[in-house]
Amino acid sequence: MLALTLLAAGLGAAVNTVRPGRLPWRGDWARHVEARALRQQIRLAGLDTVRQAVNTGAPVLLDARPAADFRAGHLPRAQSLPFELAPELFAPLQATLTRAQPLLTYCTRNDCDEGLELALFLRQQGYTNVMLFPGGLHEWRAAGGAVEDGP
Amino acid sequence: MNTRWLSPLSRWIVGLVFLAACLPKLAAPQALALAIFRYHLLPHGMVNAAAILLPWLELTAAVALLLAPAYRRAAARLLLGLLAAFTAAIALDLHRGLDIACGCFSLAPGVGRAGAGSLLRNAVLMTLAALAIWTPAGKKPCPC
Image 1 (tube, rainbow over the protein chains, first blue to last red):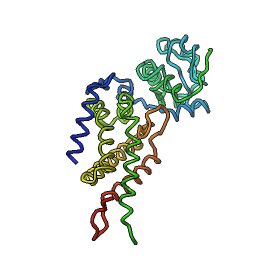
Image 2 (image 1 turned 45 degrees about the horizontal axis):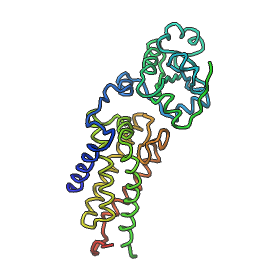
Image 3 (image 1 turned 180 degrees about the vertical axis):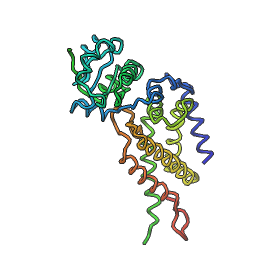
Image 4 (image 1 turned 90 degrees about the vertical axis):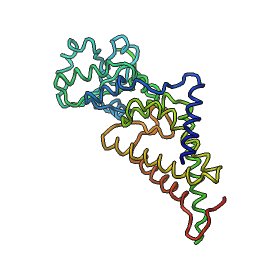
């Protein structure tokens, strides 16, 4: 078993050294948005939950990207709530939500952090059931999900 | 009842399944690293190393299981160990309520969510891997 393990390790290391776009042996995963979300105890949602939100309206989908990006394409049923303007724009939306209502935030892809920042803002406002879809619009599109444009 | 066929059949099934499973991982180590990271079980410093080594471990063990008689038992034990680790990881994340992709046979978004089906499939594969190690009492290991 040791011989097989050593052979596999040698092959893996050798191929990784010569392949284009090789993976560094240590990645900076601690700063990844999903690791930060879990540290902040924000739940992560996968595609199944997002499909449910798109199909049924629950959880409520909140797009944390700038309004122009939202107009260019967003998840069906999503409402625009750009993170940077959330303190001003949240008031009218607040009237339609209960504190325990499931909310699901997202941004472009898993290297953006507006979705997480918006989730943290919502929790600070007293919303207790806030989730983040870390893959964002990019993962939704890659999975063949429909995208709406316009306001 | 003659059960000598059980061990070689199990070996071929497990070997071919792992060959199929390692190919997308070999092709996309970045995507594999993200899939491993999303289990949130390994220390961050070990995620990339696991993504670099894991598919080669699967490939080497699968090839040895199918084509190298001297290493068959070692390969079956290695794959049994990998399956046990994968099963524990999926079970732990289901228990923690994480909604993640399995990353088992495909790394494409939205394909193969980790769930009860993944656990059941792994249980079947673990049984087959154990059968691949097993030799009926009083018989020599099958040279087939």
